[in-house]
Image 1: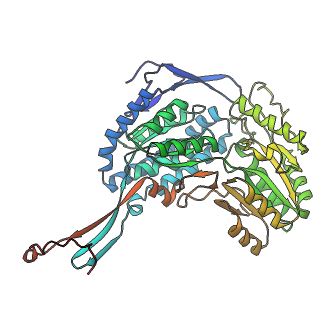
Image 2: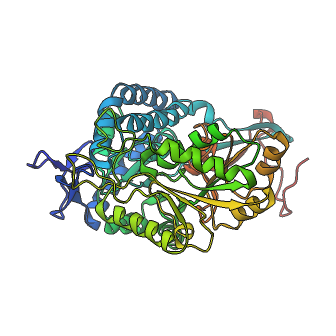
Image 3: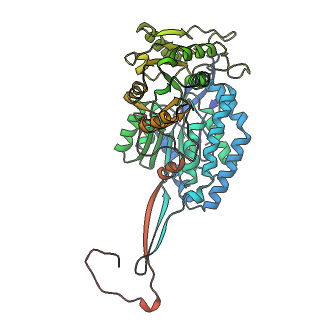
Length: 506
């Protein structure tokens, strides 16, 4: 399977080694900070996907029979290798995504938390047991792997989001096929190499790079039992529909429009710090980024002023430069889309407190830059509010009361994450009970749960019943089986006669 290749080519990983595939097709990779082509990525054909899945299916059967102790040992080794190679992984992320190195290293750290959780798989897969449920009859439950499962991950977290999936899936005894974003795929190959070094058998973890064609092939493949997806809501909906049509289990996490409510009694400085951190980290390309601040009553003016002051201190530049707080956006097309939405908001009446569309970065005129932007007096009727911007644009919507703020959040079609900033415990408790959102922060602007809880939203932010990682991840990557058994003493091993009635306990 090994073939000659250009050193800047990112290939598939199948059967424990790099593989160019059979399509002969490649796409360019670009450095977002310079706009220059930095390499190529192989694009899988349907036949290439089939090769990867068949290899995974063969390897997965043996892996499923591997003891929990041996699986756990591989997970521990993988976890240590990822930790040891954090800096290298972060450099690869920054080179293709553009986020600053510290943010990239933080992404790896959050992925490691899921690996930590998966190391406890012997405990997580314990079943239940009931003795003598009927005379001489015992019952117990077990959870078994599904077989081959696939993950389709987005560009914004090329290490963390796949690690929400594959450590848990593999620990549960499945073989895993990853289709990373074709915009920043190279770090996935490095992760595959770390799995191999950890002792994972060849074929249990595979990477197929590609575009929509690869996704469609995974969704249609009869040997893929389940699909995990993270991306935009339109694609998540399509993935869910295709998975159902092909009889697959699925979890499809979609888009977000995360609101942060600031009450008049909130600490303005703390709220402003949190909003700037959550809105502009990773250039706003986070599904948990705060994109809308709902400022209640007298909180609005001091909050906007405090955010404006903090934006003025932020440095935009290449992610590899130590002084950079925020890097570029992922592509020129995405940068242009975000800029267009900012212009649309201004045209519809929003106040541009800070306009980042004309930001210039010395020495990098062709990078995909858009500076931190603050729009005040945004209304729900505006396009910039209705759309998931997915960029460094913080919008302020002003309301007069808590009830108006709650109604605004609950009326939004997305329900991924939300936050409230207040010093009133009663208001905070009321908000956590009444808000229709899957992940809630109280004086925490990015309420991403720890790995032993599950990540997922409500409404159009999630298609499927189970969230990723945590105990729900274990449920997703296994299926339950109930066993009822009777063992008789030798003296009692005689037939008791035929009885066509429905069996009951006695």
